Length: 299
Ligand code: NAD
Image (spheres, rainbow, N blue to C red):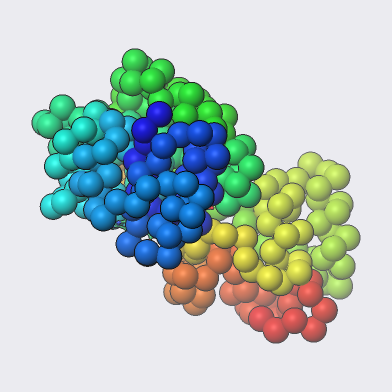
C-alpha cells in the first residue's frame, strides 16, 4: 500500500520502519529532519508537509505528541485536510475521544474519514510489532487498513462510534499509570523498612501483586536506575488528565483515578514533562528518604 506517516518519534519511527520493511511504500514527514532522513535511508520517501504526504497517499497515519499537534496536522493550514489523494486519516496518537470526534467532523466535511487507532505496548512493542492497536470508525474503512495495521501489532475493532478507541486507550493507560505509582509506593514502603527491592519485585512477580510496572518497568528502568523506558512523563500526564476529563463528561467520579491523577501532577511538577515516566518513583522516594535499587545511585 501507499501509506503516509507523520510523526516519527519514539513510537512513530519504529512503526513506520516496520511498515517499510513489510514492503509498503511510505511517504513520511516530521518536524525533525533527522528522523525523516533515517527513514529515507531505509526506503521511505520524504515529504515536506502533512499536505504533501496527503497528496501522495490515500491512507495517512500519524503518531503525534499532543492534541494540538494532531489537530494541526490533520486540519490546519498545509495539513492532511488539503491533500489531493487522501481518503482516510488514521490517528495512532492518544488524543481522547473529544478531540478525535472534533477531527472526525472537520475531516468529514472534505470527505476524508478519520479513524482512531491509539496503540499500547510501548517502544518495545512498536519495535517488535506486538502493540495492542485499538481502532474505531467505519467498519469498511477498518477492513481496508487492517492488513497494514497488523504489521505493528494485534488489531482490535472497538466500534463504529468515532472516539471509542480513544476511550478504550484511556481506560488502559489509567491502569498503566496506576501500576507505576502504586508499585512505587509499595516498594518504597518495603525499602524503608529494610526489604531488598530486587527480592520484592521477584516476589511480587511470582505473586498476586504482579502488574506491568513490576513486570517490565522496575526490572528494566527503575531498579537499574536508568529511567529510560521510552515514554515521557508529559505524555503519561496527558493521558491521565484526558481520562479524568472523559470520566467527568460522563458524569462519573473515579476515586482511584483522581488520587492517581494527583500523584502524577506531583511527578510532572517535580521531574518535568520530558523526564521518563519511570521517574515517578523519585518524588515518592524523596518523601520517604530512601533510594530503590542501583547501589549508591543518585536520585
Ligand atoms: P514523541 O514525542 O517521541 O514523538 C512525536 C513526534 O512527532 C516527534 O518526532 C516530533 O518531532 C513529531 N511532531 C510533533 N509535532 C509535529 C508536527 N506538527 N508535525 C510533524 N511532526 C510533529 O512521542 P511518542 O512517545 O512517540 O508518542 C506519540 C503518541 O503515541 C502520543 O500520543 C503518545 O501518548 C502515544 N503513545 C506513546 C507510547 C510510548 O511508550 N512512548 C506508547 C503508547 C502510545
